[in-house]
Length: 110
Length: 119
Image (cartoon, rainbow over the protein chains, first blue to last red):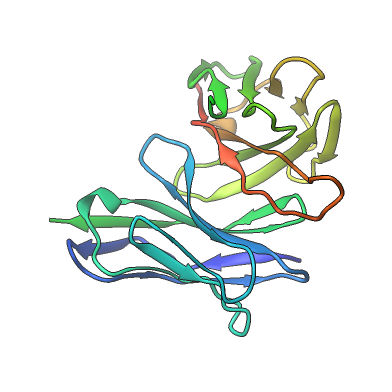
């Protein structure tokens, strides 16, 4: 069945470091791919999305490219800030179903 | 345009009581999803509903849990005879769903969650 596998955390980085959080997927159709972010005590917020192969989603300095050949949607940011500390979820959407990864906790230290 | 609303935000119940969680989707959204998040774990899908219909309840425990999305009013997730293992954050999400027969995937918009604590 469809699924998402996400890099395990927790991840701790210094401010201004480069961030990569890996995400790979398995899908039988043509899914859309998403990254959601969850700040402490809050619900999930959409960070970025891509709806077809080779699309690049971007928002707030974060980017992810939908790679069909490697079935991946890795999240990257060139220079993280303390305010980026949160849990990041990769998700796959197909039809009306969503599949979430287990989440990667990111802590950015000054 | 108000986002997805959930209430209560925090709910404390004793073992054996009933918990009732409410979710009002975004205006114009007819699809509702419920997820459970256990401490230090990811989101687990529970149930997907449209107005007056349960579309997919494959993630719902077979006993004590039920969900509805009536024609009028919010979606309700009901947990009867709660146990300590039910303590978790329960999130509701909504989407506008399919558009005019086109297979169109819409993102899901999440509410702030209800944190259930069972004593």
